[in-house]
Image (cartoon, rainbow, N blue to C red):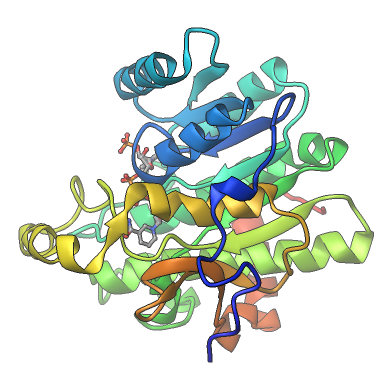
Length: 315
Ligand SMILES: NC(=O)c1ccc[n+]([C@@H]2O[C@H](COP(=O)([O-])OP(=O)(O)OC[C@H]3O[C@@H](n4cnc5c(N)ncnc54)[C@H](OP(=O)(O)O)[C@@H]3O)[C@@H](O)[C@H]2O)c1
């Protein structure tokens, strides 16, 4: 059942944010969609933004557009990173650590979705699990100490898809070699991301470290998410229905901006739009289904993620 919105009937909006001068926000996949809109909010409040994007040309265009809007002095840069390639994540993390002395929040926003046919990354992962979960798992681990030293946050952008599909991590066939469907594989990847986030929260709390981990989703937002990877029927369906059922990319960015800036948010909570089955509307706390908090799955997924990324990590 939905809880009353702590932020009032309009929900959370960026009007609640004061000056962000001196703050640094790192956003994955910020050349478009919700990540780009989040960058706009941070820059409008005076923060520095570092985008971690896979496409240099799109990044240059995004930066040009942001500097056009916020002025040539707007502090926005990009580091090239392809989350589908673990070596690229390692190189990008090293580059970022060499150029940014503190990180107020890392926002794990990038994703691919509804990949029509099974695709396997160079590291051997089903593509959505590889990009959305394993890539971000490694990035969070590599940047964790700098975020901790900054008393910063990690924001994981999930999806209502975590409660669709199989509602489990299919450990026995992670890549869906036997029974691939775009929905099940996307849903698994977004479930993996939020199970990881809540497990990271628990581990951070246990060690008393100074990192907040927050989890959100953008509801249904009009972005490019299905443009590259989804099947033709899915793309057509989304084109027809999205003007009626989805909100703007700008509103879709608010939950991640809130999780990066608002004080007093709860752990073990999911934040996002709260109306029409949590697809649109005022931003606040959304119901969270218990399978996202399953401890045994979380432990198994953490160990597996360490093995698959060759990165052992004790927050
Ligand atoms: N839109 C929705 O209705 C919806 C619903 C539920 C959840 N979400 C979540 O919201 C978040 C933002 O998505 P969006 O809707 O804003 O989609 P979007 O417009 O497609 O933006 C996704 C971003 O991720 C980047 N990306 C994709 N693959 C990457 C890779 N291998 N390495 C690095 N970056 C990569 C994209 O870069 P390119 O431009 O190079 O492709 C793009 O910048 C995602 O986590 C998504 O799962 C969205």
